[in-house]
Length: 233
View 1: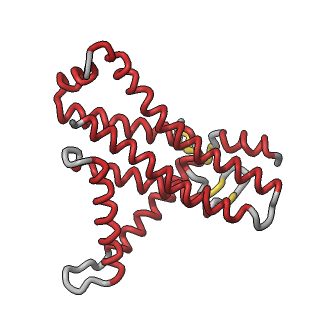
View 2 (view 1 turned 60 degrees about the vertical axis):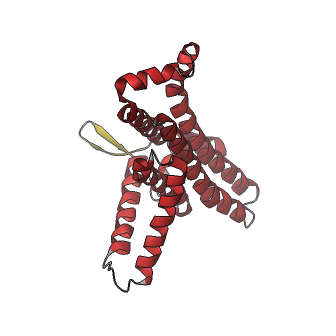
């Protein structure tokens, strides 16, 4: 399969099976698999937790949770600290989705297991919409509907159209940044595999599938945290 055909295939929405009129796509199935893996990992890490004489597994899990809580709270600020677990959930889902590229394996001609859900534009659109919906809900909860509507005319009424337009611009920016970076990394790796199919792509694979995947997860939640923090001020 040439590069052009490969890119067209990656951009397409692959149907795995149907449940009545509902189409279940490759991205949905891979999301389910990743959620089950994360659930099993969480159950293993939290099994047998104790207050006295905790084991290494418990200490590692607690240290990770405390570290990530502090990191997200520092981005959200004190007033928006109540949304910390929502943002952590976003971070873990996007990071795990991006990192699943390491295990990406074609099972059949129609299905690739562990293909990153974030490589599907529909998934990144959904993530961006969820993020912005949470931002606006946070603003309404903090200010009330009246105060939320008035916030669009701050600092002056003349820029109200621009503030309203941000409701569209922000999710579009989040969506395209995440999708563009993940898909762009895929394109670069495919070109490298064609040009230098042996050892050279390995360090680039480490960068695009691990480092860049984690960076993009962080950027997404960092911007979401900033938007929520602004909404509750």
